[in-house]
Length: 198
Image (cartoon, rainbow, N blue to C red; front, top):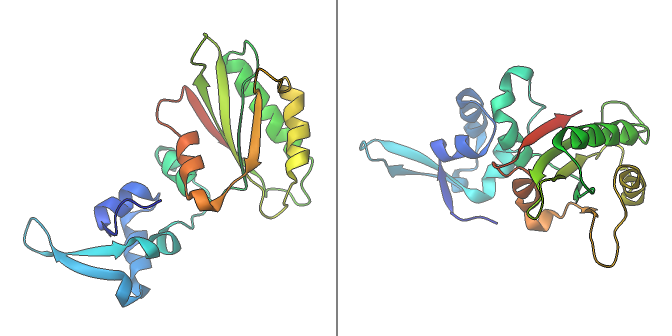
């Protein structure tokens, strides 16, 4: 879902985990109909990029290096994910959830056809009605295409099942029609902890 039609260089750099040098390199071959110049506050012309070209130009991104940890949230919001979900185990602390999510990652790795083609992002958030915690997560397994049912089986190891009155496990395929909404929700700034595995 887009909120604007045209974006400035500053806005592009706020949205995507890229450097100024990468920005300059990628706009060299931009379709002329996808860019325009407008007068900036300083009076000099400022390049604007049409929203329809932004993901094609700036969304593709290698994994972050350790020194780019401050770009994690931008990276998560612009990465291509296959699955989105959350778990709400009963009476779980932050440390217990970290252990559960790291265990899930190791279990999912056993389903891979090739090594290093799995990425799991998870974040931990406080439950609204008690002093325990739950976790949101995103999974990228595009090169292996792990099945939804296999992931559900692994989630059942670390979380109690859903009941008529309580939803403990939620998992679905990441719907590209919702644009980046799932990634943005999973990476809300008020999380207690987040980590990218893979």
